[in-house]
Image (cartoon, rainbow, N blue to C red; front, side):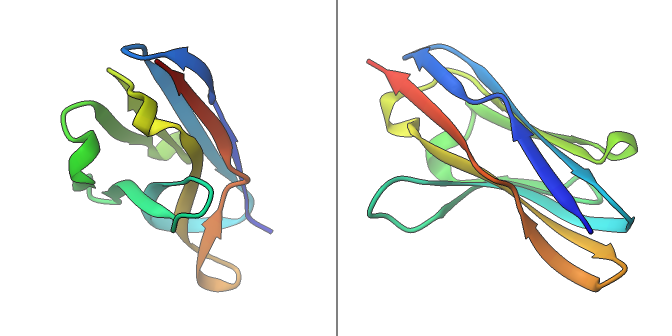
Length: 119
């Protein structure tokens, strides 16, 4: 059984930084891509950043130049470095990973971590 465990959320003042981590464990043959989403109450979950197994990245416009997604393939871990945080970044952040495991290729989600940016 594949599990994702997130960490790194918290409360920070505007202009500050946080780094989120998401570690995958279990029987994993390969990982196709990693992504971070975020969601606020009453809104749809939004893709924030994505990185493929080849290292290609894409970001939502609102975080371009402020957030950086990276992954450590040896540790099956993805990171989201968030700089120059703004109150509008406040949300629950979820990691999403497409994994090829014993059940074939499936999407997995982390439990979510709260990020709160105060003005």
